[in-house]
Length: 517
Image (cartoon, rainbow, N blue to C red; front, side, top):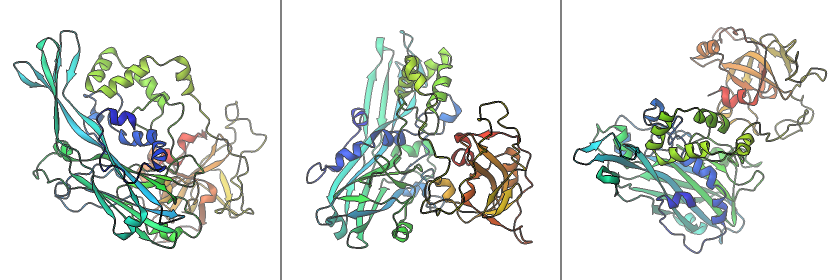
């Protein structure tokens, strides 16, 4: 947070009634929240001329309502990759003593800033090289903004509270050396507000709603998206902290709270528990990017690369291979791009080595019983004990993904088998959970390097099933997440015949989250 504020962030709606212990808890999410704030800000190869950097800011963008709904109302969803004019978080809060409990809400976003280079005597230009060889480029930057408030839970239950989260207009002028020209940075006013309310569900359980809306007047109807962004909140997300209260996981709710969790309506954002895994939930992050509970930035990561879905080692190696001319353009594009290049160019060898081959956890060969799988349920099949390790010669001998089968509920499942998807309530990929109850056809059986098994499937009702089959793009599920079905009936869609797949072991990067993208 300190970095964001030092670079132009604002704070408004000062906390009422003291800082409270939740303030320190919110700071624990600083690195993760900053990764959300700058996700997609400027992607590799970090140059203005790069095609992928010509359409920017794809997450959590809140435009003036009339502009974004010029062609019809927006369709709500939990992902913030669609443009909207509002963002709504609903979550459950357990208060041990509701009378004394307090809730802290912090709203964060980026405000677009137009950087215009002007040459002396000639006016605005796209680029300008000064006598010292420095290149200055016209480009759209952004400044981090955050506003927060702390309120008694009782006040929220009595009617709620609304506070402003906008930012003022402004202009900064930087004179270039030797009278070559100047750089003018301009910002338009952001008008927005956040309303926080609470509804009591039982003696100690409340539903909290946080709704942030862009209240700015709409620009002209034919205004381009790039221009409309000047009045938009970008990468909008919310942090919530509870004093004398704790939040409930919406991904893995406690027994008895499944129904109130399903009743929560999250639109263009989704809340997850913050802090360390196993914490009871004193802090919550509601982000326009789907995350798991207790998200963490990899401890070996030396800094943000503006694409949290990528791997530091890969992006670092690619950045090292940029030509000198490409690096000059990247440095001239944006100060954050220059900082990435400086970090990569000066990275000590021991720091770079830490990016390779981190092991997060080791899974036992026989999974323990859980609420989702009774102790007498068959364990996920593992590779035979006498099979060579995956890196040794002969490890793939006898493996045939398109003809291998695995036993599920006494039924052998393999290529061509029909199944119903039953993602586990705990530990399932968020994207896979959206497919619960859908029917699919098994394409292949893959043995992972850790000895477990995944089945590649195509959805029966996916209009692109045949194309995905041809590309070899599948959804992946463990055997205990599948329910065997009989052959397709005459009125049911049938998936295309399985394409031949090479015998191979899969790695973690090939399991559901990566392959379903």
